Image 1 (spheres, helix red, strand yellow):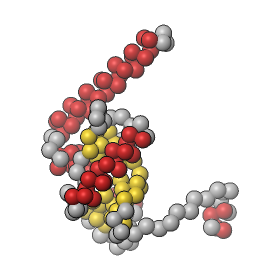
Image 2 (cartoon, rainbow, N blue to C red):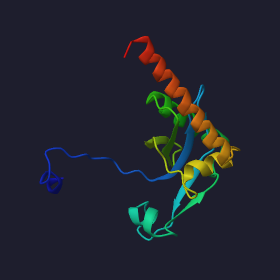
Image 3 (cartoon, rainbow, N blue to C red):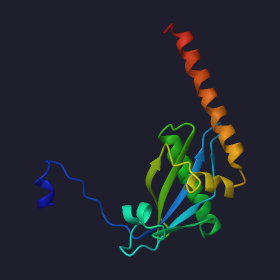
Length: 161
């Protein structure tokens, strides 16, 4: 911490967590939908999901699709992902990344409100695994965007902006 304070007057200190990284895709709508869970399994030599493991070493991590979870853990993870999406008032799409501790506790690691959407990205893979084709997923995202544009236009009309 002394070293950190050489660079700023504030530092962030977090406790370490030994956990599995579980990821879920959320698709907005009324109600929003949540995919099955996937898992990032790190096999990189540094032992964690580092920049090298994620972007440079093609064998640094692998995706476990679907994640090997007990049904109750899967349900709790989906509920937490949905609650996170709704609490943050997200729209459209997001990927919610959770930590699953050895004691079975689920912790929100982060939410990606504009997750990757390439052929190797977790978001479309999770939806494909959940039974939603890429064509249907993209169609639904376009529909959600158009719905949002209509809502915003109605606000402007109603308030004369």
